[in-house]
Amino acid sequence: MPPQAVPQAHPSVRLVTGFAGFGAGSVNLAIASSFFAAGSGEPERVIAGAVAGLWGAALLAGAVVFLARDRPAGGRRVRYALAAAAVAHLAAIAFPTPATSGLNLTHLSALLLTLMIIASLAWLGRASGEKRAMRPGRLLLAAFAGAVLVAGITTPGLAASTAGQYAVPHGGHGNLAPGGHHQH
Amino acid sequence: MRNSPNRLIATIFGAVYLLVGLLGFAVTSGVGFAATEGANLIIFEVNPLHNVIHLAIGAALLFAGLRGTASARTVNATVGAVYLLVGIVGLFLLNSPLNIIALNGADNVLHLASAVLLLGVGLSLDKSPAAARA
Image (cartoon, rainbow over all chains, first blue to last red; front, top):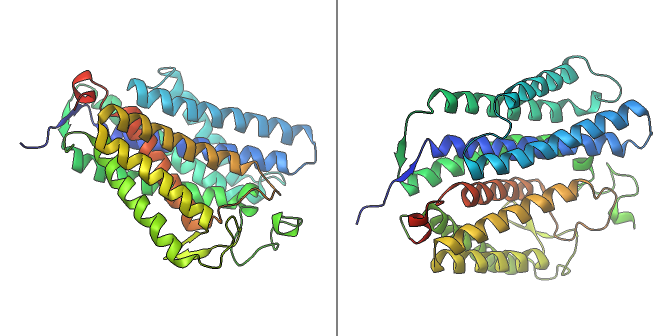
């Protein structure tokens, strides 16, 4: 019996959109942790950290809702929020402040993932009337390629954050994180 | 099984994780059970605890993949969510001795890719009742 097609609209693009949402959410949480890890208690850092943390949590929750319900939570407003986030990441790269200057790669990673979500949603919106059947094996290959792409963008962003610098760089222990876990 | 992306991916990932768990023990002799410095399996750093986790996850995924679509969906989403949660919580465990599975950069890419793939497929595919009975 031939493999049954998966009767959903553009499942591979939907999956990649969700993957990018998970990646962007994780990177925004890393940005938040970097602001909080600075530990200076300056109000601007605390506010920036809180905003990045809330946005990261919203992206993760939105990715779950999108994958489970096949449509983005919040409708059209989501696109404006995503565009605003992309502008904020771009501004953080173009006009670095002492608080953001060490996070350029992390912001770049977040920017790329946010743009991936915007582009995928636009593509899905334009092709919303079409139904495309895809064989499960081919679908999984496309999904795997998308997951590796998203992980390949997300991981350098996480590694460049303050949290990533503490995350056990093998062979370089103790160099980046004074008082790190090997010194306990 | 060929009709269900969830069963396919659970079975494939289960078999691969079981194999990686077994091969890991071949390279981690002499490494402490939860040592923060492990040994390289190709480019992925592992220690015995990491191997045990690979074996447990592999067994759960393989069992669910062979059992049915509903089980595969549940286990895929659960394992994916746990991987993602551990990755995110780990970001906030700065300056702590809790990194006990000897992660390196290659591990992080693979774990994140596994997390988004398993969670995405588990949440998104095989949702129709007919697919769930496959």
